[in-house]
Amino acid sequence: MINWGEIDTVFLDMDGTLLDLHFDNHFWLEHVPQQYAGKHNLALDEARRVLEEKYQAIVGTLNWYCIDYWSDALELDIAELKREIEHLIAIRPGVEGFLLALKASDKRVVLVTNAHQKSLSLKMENTGLEKYFDALICSHDLGLPKEDPAFWDKISVQEPYRRERTLLIDDSASVLESARRAGISHLLSIQQPDMQQAPRPAGEFPAVESFSELLPIA
Image 1 (cartoon, rainbow, N blue to C red):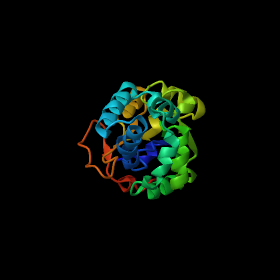
Image 2 (image 1 turned 180 degrees about the vertical axis):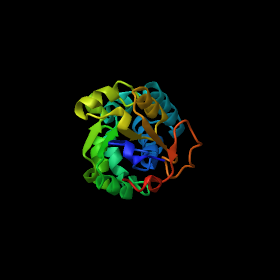
Image 3 (image 1 turned 90 degrees about the vertical axis):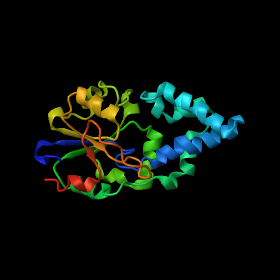
Image 4 (image 1 turned 120 degrees about the vertical axis):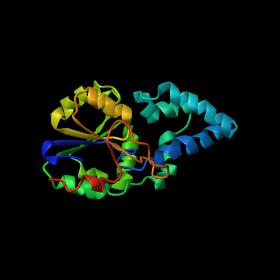
């Protein structure tokens, strides 16, 4: 699937790529609606309707991923609510073996996430994956989400890379399209971001079922 001789830099997404997206789906679709309903004295179905409108209004923007924004907008302590269900944070199968192989290679390995810094810290604390990376880059530090092609220009200031020799693995088609428009040559998606949902149908980008498919790394 990948000719590793053509790759110098590997950019890896976090949620839905290295980590099971079930945590995030459960958090935003189940845990937050329950807490919002209680806080605002709403029926659960009504809370879900209100939240869905709020979600859709800013999807794909930096605020969509911002814990501080949602804490203010919903009058809930989003960071604390995430800690209440942190036991659901899980590494996807085959990820650690893949990261070990990358670390032993000559590739530069960078986590590139839209997650807010507080979410990133919580997930690194729970998984211990930080040790596998040469750098961790959060889109909030750059002021743009990965969906914006200009993000890939901005990241090069902090993390110089050759676009024709870079691999990005991400579960988001809109992020992969953004990276393609920015000139990144090697792009892979994830077949089953949420391990409790069915695998997604084949899309425009080649998809990884298991990270073991990408081994060995030379």
